[in-house]
Length: 123
Image: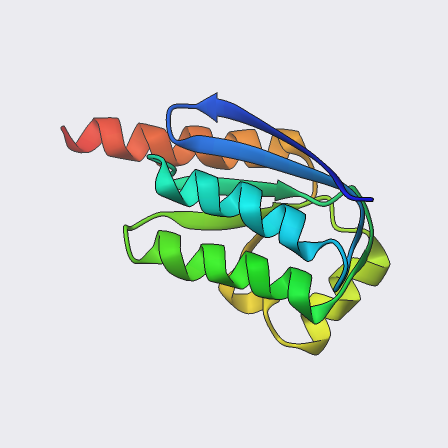
């Protein structure tokens, strides 16, 4: 069974934390949660993959689908805390260069702070 926790970090920025295996039997759970976020005002979806033990092509498909949807509205998908075996899967399919990957929540928060500061400075 796949457990998913979602919380809004700031307006439009959602942290999604799946726990377990994202495979052909469980990816639909993740897909439904992501689809509901995509129906909202989400501009950034952060996937914290620290508790993901396995990811199949179906799971990667959900993440890439979210990336495409958010890109169309000038948003983005961010990955963090990838376990070595999960990171290897993304490297094999060459998906990492088009995704932002962070090693920790602190690194992500610094990035988000920088992005938000740039937006407010333009006003």
